[in-house]
Length: 122
Image (cartoon, rainbow, N blue to C red):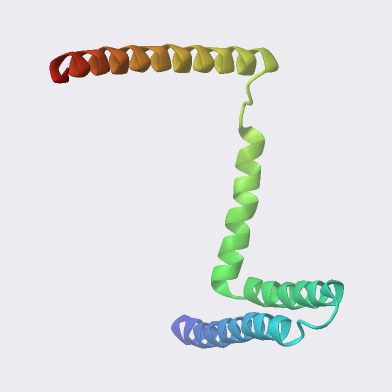
């Protein structure tokens, strides 16, 4: 019985995704067709079409899974320990110093090789 429910839900999901694709296509075509209209009206219409398409996509199984993943990611971001201002400044200073040292080292190697090649070529 559960397989039948999943099968019918899968068919409805396919239909919903087709409607979402049609809404997106209608938005793109409509924006092009009404290019002579005010940009404000076209943007507002596109926002409405995008909102309807997004809400319809969230009604599907994959849409619900995406929304759940988004909520879990938001929870995980709250758990991140962000560096203090002092740690950020120190790390940035270290990166700048290392980049300068590597740049000077590469310049020195390039100058030496250039001097050797010009000495051989004459």
